[in-house]
Length: 171
Image 1 (cartoon, rainbow, N blue to C red):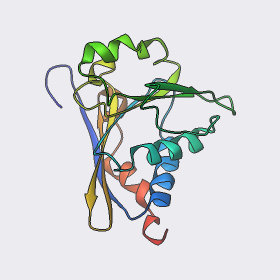
Image 2: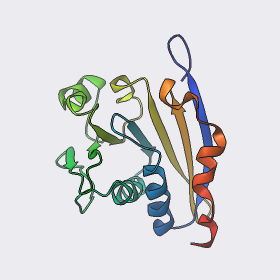
Image 3: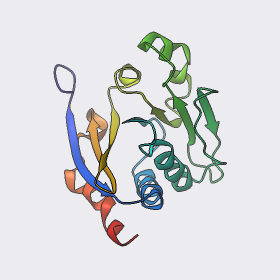
Image 4: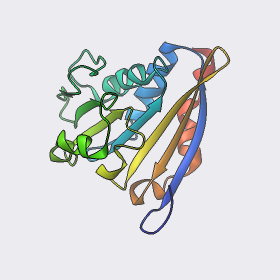
């Protein structure tokens, strides 16, 4: 999304052949994340959203296990290494941005990495600076499109996201 007050950032598309590779991609993505980052995950049921978050959790070294928060809506995974906590939310059962607002994710947004599954069209209002990760079927695997939005990501080149995929083909 671009427009007044919005700065388009980098984007890259990565092909992910397996669940294990999706976790590896999440671990690598965690290396780019810091406290205050919002990641919105978009994809159909079974696309690999939670699997990606498991990798992010491993990369951030948080207490696990990281599982789908569909029924509890949000979980906090404390850092085991002094880094940011992981707030993992699932907006599948939410119908409006107002319901996302009711989760009070903004209370921990500055101090945590916040990942919202099914957040497309619902969670963008939490932060102008965010990553959107769209996961779609692609042959035997998944295509993962990572797009940065806002000032936070504007200085990062598309190649920084593409570098996340280096060596994934052999996994």
